[in-house]
Length: 510
Ligand SMILES: [Ca+2]
Picture 1: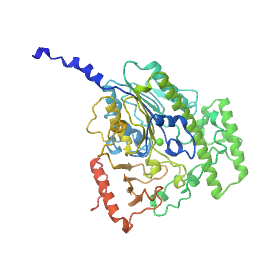
Picture 2: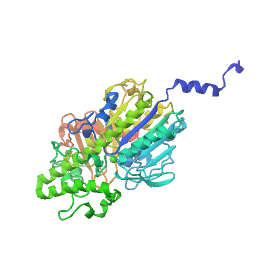
Picture 3: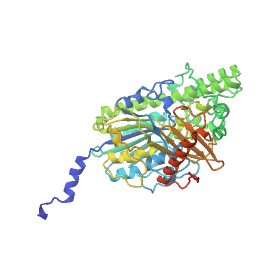
Picture 4: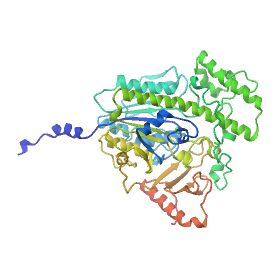
């Protein structure tokens, strides 16, 4: 009987054929927040190409990060683990340990080709990628440098266009068309200092963006919020952020050295930049603004430049989608659009991220689904960026290692709503002391309530009722009426800290 059994090697192609081997295109931007993406929020701008992803697929309405900062968020995505497990807790002192298990390495083992183009920001050289062509550090918007295995080099043009060009070139010219692939397209857009593509300098200049209702927040009852350095009024700079030249200056050649990135532009492009921002500067000085008028002027400059940067991003996502469609890849490719975290667009008077408050805990998550994944419309289950790794592994037909802490989203993408899906997410931010002075904190975000604990140089708790107070203005911690809720949320926080094996946890009798 034994001789009639097929050898194991002969069975393997049958197994592979049974599993649909979806390609993956993962587009991640930097600091692109849902308030500036019309699939989520159409008050400010329109993003028709980004919205297309959701129209042909799904929009996650409760998508969260584990640590709202560039490098840590990327490390969570690559490993499927919280920061304390992947080791990259903050940008200031972090070097990503590329020797550890990562999702791209596991995809390679499963027979996938892997490529990353654009922002990396994890200091160590990429591992697990067959092809990588990345930015040094934060990168430059104008005529940027890239580096790859051969070394570094400068590319002429606007970064968002170049990253897309590189992605398309790899798809068309460099990969093996007979193997499945995972392509990671990581944009620098829309990171500070929001330098627009030169052809879009004049866009949105006639728009006055509405101030968020809590723009003039006094931070009452929220000690850590009041100690930050991310207020548009106090901390957003006129020169670096708003591109306003000194009153007696004659153009951007008088800029301080930290604005030297403009020297990257050739004479013709620099003249276009100067022509636009010099006119803005002259107008600004004529106004002699002070007080609230000055703060609101800075807000408008911020919103307009950010919106221009998103416009190029939207163009380029559209271009990549069109290309995938033209090449017949869209039916067999999961296209993910997300950001490394959300951002404040004037809420609480802020720019930047870091906090566990909703605007920066949230991150956009849109997916165009290939044939066979039938979900459409909104997905309301709570998901987190540690879930991407197990999702991609399952779609690749690869085993999900037990030490991965995220959960595969594939059941949700099939239109299922598992009853035991998570009802809360865990968050932990570490980067303090550091730029913007956001204190270290961890917390739990449940279906209705959020509990946060600021520790290290202080010991302060915050509790929010997201149903009655969605903008988190009223800290209910210590309110006798919230005693039971507080107890439950602390219990849940401790449960998550134990589940995820975070050694930094609070000590308190429940
Ligand atoms: Ca970021």
